[in-house]
Length: 136
Ligand code: ZN
Image 1 (spheres, rainbow, N blue to C red):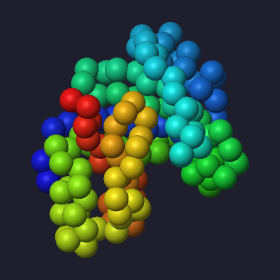
Image 2 (cartoon, rainbow, N blue to C red):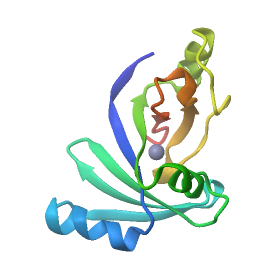
Image 3 (cartoon, rainbow, N blue to C red):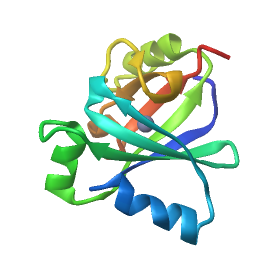
C-alpha cells in the first residue's frame, strides 16, 4: 500500500480539559479543533506537529472503546494512524496478506477523514488506523 506519512497519533485521555494544557503550555502546540465523533463515542482534540497530528481522545460514554481501553490499560498511547492514498485498496491488500481487520469497510472519522482500523493481533499489538482524506 502507499503510505505518505503518519497522519496522527491517538492518545487516550480521561479528560481533554485536563490533558490539553500539557500540549499547549508545555509543548507549545495549539489545539485547533475539538470535535465529537458520535459514531465512536469520543470527543477529540487535535494539535498539528509538522504534517502529523496528535489526537487526544476522551470517551463520551462508558461503552466507548476509549473508556474500555483506559479501564484495562490506563490512559496513554492508543493508536497510530497512517495516511494512505487509496483506503479501499489498502484494506484489501492488508486482508489479502492475512491481516485481521476491525473495519472491513472504511467509515467516517474525525476531521472528515475516511478511516479503518487493523486489528492489534495482526499489528504487533499497535492498534493501527489507515486514513484517507477524500476531500483533498
Ligand atoms: Zn485516529
